[in-house]
Image 1 (tube, helix red, strand yellow):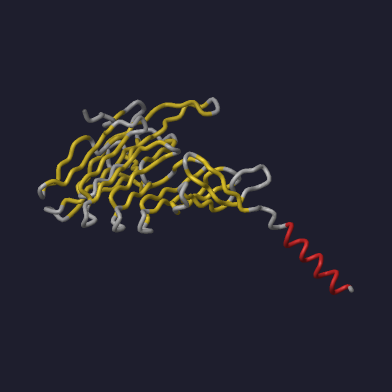
Image 2 (tube, helix red, strand yellow):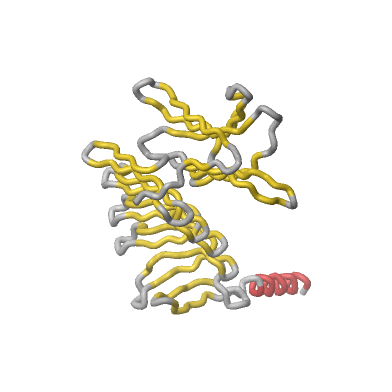
Length: 257
């Protein structure tokens, strides 16, 4: 009897631990199918179907909020679109593919806002158009590959230093858009200059579309500078552009008309 009672208890636990039933709901002209938690919110992978039952793709949820990968497919079963959600918002790159599985576009999102780099590809997976959008949606840089020529418009360097009040202290905050044109090998570093404008130290700046940091106070005679490196194929070495950083300084941020 003790053995049978143990099996009965185990069975009850297994049933109670899987109380999330598969639910089908119609929303925005689609049928969504997935598990729901007790508050009637989707949780986990939720499949999407057309009203006539055709599979359209899936989206991951966490307690009713979109969280993780969301994928849509073409009629032939290949992926047509994909995006990652965080906190119920689009975050990271969104991808669009043609019916042969070739990448057509790649666009960056930051909490549902389209900003930063946008790439357009040709059928040979070559970037033919690159645009960079500000947080306001303004076009601040564009690269086009046309008839064998590399055409550029706008400023690569877009940086500003603003004063902010943090817990009663006034601090300088650096903001930089990270523009990486496909045809240029470019990188950024945050450097420190001495009184003779010699670089005494530097650190790499990395990120997808923007970089922001508080600039700590430096000893008298020292200052911050943005170091922008671009590889020069003719010289076979990097060219260096130094932008000295002071409170209120602005480089770039000009929208292309």
